[in-house]
Length: 414
Image 1: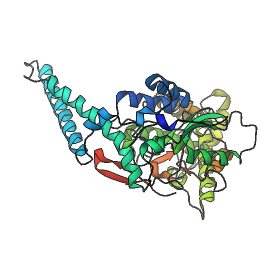
Image 2 (image 1 turned 30 degrees about the vertical axis):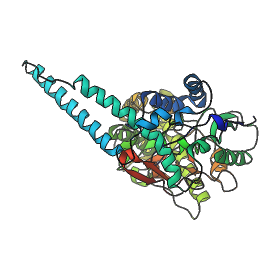
Image 3 (image 1 turned 90 degrees about the vertical axis):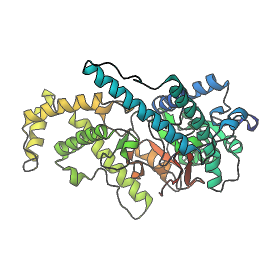
Image 4 (image 1 turned 45 degrees about the horizontal axis):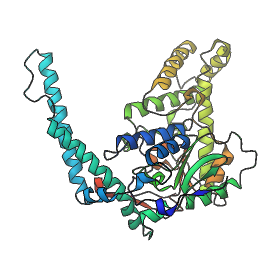
């Protein structure tokens, strides 16, 4: 498909982002609609986001990255943004305290406190702070470009977005990433049918390199971000209780199917190698092996696989004391746990967590192809973000300004 470039005359001016990539939940300064757009884009691919852009903006002029004249007047200075966030958080903490007091009074059958919630004036202040911080989030895109020595204005940067395809799937990316995706395509033999069913690329402000058109997620619904529950930053992505439960299910599958303990599996440890290609290959091998183990695990409670289960239980001698019947009970519990766990946009969970051919990963990461960083290999995103590839190692943006938090965060190496 021929690339369709967005007209420079209708492009925008600017803004912000975040450390590793895309935190699954919207930042405090993200509006409800922007959060919904982000969610739709991750789960349904770019078709959904394109529709919303057209509905909201009447075209593909990427207005969600534009600071209008009116917004410019209301945009807080970078130095004022942290104070506004602190004020909002103080109000929300006060709201929580008041509601807790009201609940305690109700439980004790006592009269409610005089102020059981925020006043209407205080609630309006929270909304106003959110509105202004959302504008600041847009403005931080220009701050990020400047901090990285990029001479383009935000308007010029977003004028270079292009709508094209990668292995037949629609993508909207910056022209810098477009070139790398086309180079990667040259390394993938045809036919391409079925290799990529959905993508997530350009997003609204606040989603790290995705916001600048320099990242792509491949089949995001079936290549999840698996978060290491022991990573200190993991709660940026999801509650620790959730990541711990998922990790434990995966490790039980590895234990039963491969007689490999969590320590020996080293699932959360980044692989080593003399060069990037070696590391990527090793990471793919790990993910493929253990994704297959998870899929196998969820077949072992079936009566037809009793003999296979008995053999695996025997092979576990000395590593686990559960009987075959106890494992059947555990597998059933784990199926419920992994299928009903909230918050993660991961489908077909019992079929594993790797839904990408090796040739696609190697083409996207190879120096002769895309040269991109794969977060299924690089564990900078607090675990293994299997869907995600970006230009942090080869692109012009090496750090992200997020003035709301008073930070300029390096994206990390390759």
